[in-house]
Amino acid sequence: MGHMSKNVTLDNPAYIHESAWLYGKVYIGNGASVWPNVVTRAETFEIRIGARTNIQDFVMIHVGAASPTIVGDDCSITHHATLHGCTIGDRCLIGINATIMDGVKIGNNCIVAGHTIVTEGSQFPDNTVIAGVPGKAVASRDCGDANLVNAKFYSAMADTYAAGDDRLSQEQVDAVLSTVGQ
Image (cartoon, rainbow, N blue to C red; front, side):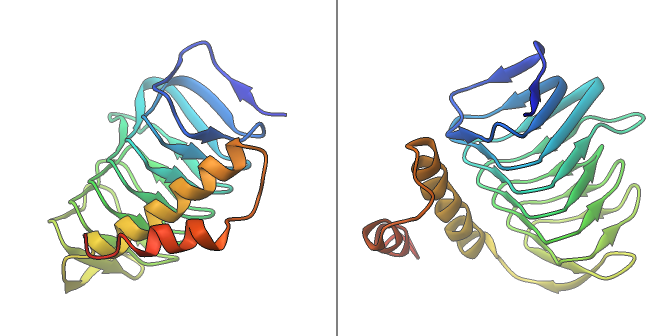
């Protein structure tokens, strides 16, 4: 059993798993999903999760010492990632077990590779692929379409889970794939 603080604002999210622990001033956007064992803590400042963004299993989101944590629309924050007082643009994918620290600003359409540690105050423009310890720009390309497809799959899964099922039908998979490039 999770927890939802009285300070959490739900703006018609698609799905929030019962084991999520949401503390403090947290905003969950329209169509967003929060998966098993997610923890958010916003004792100061706030956490904002954008529309249709998915916060996957075991993600930890906390505010920084001097900054909120803001996640844009259509993002995938993947398993075991940690976001701490940072800003993530729209259509980003934060890889498995990545850590994004205080004051970091990541532009739109970016990918942060799995196991990357993005150190305090780092800034990356739109369309950057970030990898390593510490995280560095390793490529520049628009990853927005690919990242959006991942977010659309999670939106379809959120709808399915909210309806009491845990498998996508082939029709649902085909519907998501038919949007590739649109």
